[in-house]
Length: 584
Image (cartoon, rainbow, N blue to C red):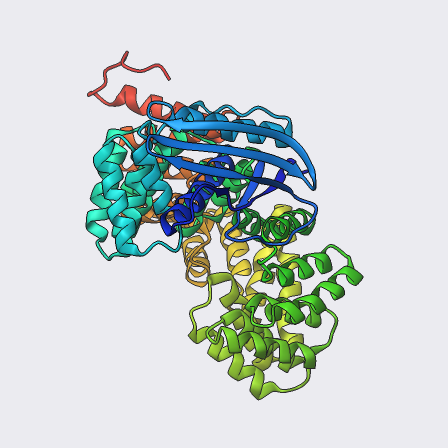
């Protein structure tokens, strides 16, 4: 179950001023307090720029009065016409940060009944009211870029410890094309305020954009170590997903939701990951929440409809697809998901039309080209199907999709019966491998590969069979085929490393084992295999590091325990360590 939250609209503040600067200051204050409340969690606050009509949602209304030495804010939290809570506060020098935090915490408590710990949010703020006014002005979206940069520079000049202002200034520098200057500013803030997680994260992202990947990961990890709140976890998940690590991203997104983060983008991204791993019911809950948090995100309707289809809710799926076509006809996801749905229903002519609509919006989509080819093949348009499959391969699909596309081309070239017979032999051969019947397995797998040589699963099972037979040269050849057909298969790389090690090709073994760990660094088995390679290379310290990391991940693994014992023996034999130097 998802944790509860309250949706709150923060309406424009009334008050004593009609100038453009007053309007900008009032709007910026609403944005600033909304961002702070969202970061604290358990609420999602939408800052409104106008009197948008809504129903059934809590609202913050009030007035802002600006005077020479500060600002006075009076707000009501309302449920319809009923006032749930009211407060009147003054922001003046030496009180700005504390008053801002207490106001945010009190509003959340009034809305949810839960008191928030605001201590960590003290980092990065200011007690200088004039500096704070300038940051509020800078948060006004319609402020011209040059004026935004000027008022932020003034805020930093007034309070050099105002880290939030410096982060906003780095944004302004980035937008002006001064990326290196912006990165230098972020580096200075991260160094000066090492426990300010926002700065560490932002600096990490800038480092990755500049090509400093290892340093970037270090900064993001430091942000997590200093402040693992919901928003920090969410941003770390974005970093991991952009770096090609969806498993870590999914874990971080889930923890962010559990910590009360209510960003609609977070819900959408976690829903996609859940749907892709076969959990449509959780995906439905998350997409429903994303829609509630931001009703303008109509592109999620197609995703939500397909999730209902996969969850067995046929009527709901049909209604949502109809709605998606009406309100989001320019969304790729509307047509891409509808194509999958129609194919599942066997409506291939309509599915082809949906694929074509999706391709009009995203012409280089290898997935949609493959899907259209599947429907063309189903209605007997073999030449059209072949064109789609071949074009799909030209657009550099990921390894798994490429396997399916080549399988479809094989069906065109050899017929469904031939490829299906290869699949049957593969399944039977895999069962024999799992049962230890290697003599029965190997001929079946070889025959399957004669029928369809692009089946990486068959090469993998054949390699495992040869491994058990200790036929290392044949094991190496089979695993090399797996890696060629599916470069992202970390375990195949690790098995290839073990075969290379058995053949005495230690440097090649190290290269493959290292790549396997780089792909899935949280797998203790892969780390253990890397340690074995390091052990055979005579690099005892590197082997120890790998074995210890693997042991921390899985203390009960017997293979890892044996490897650590073997390392202990090797160290006792190594004259550099002596006989009494180690006790693992």
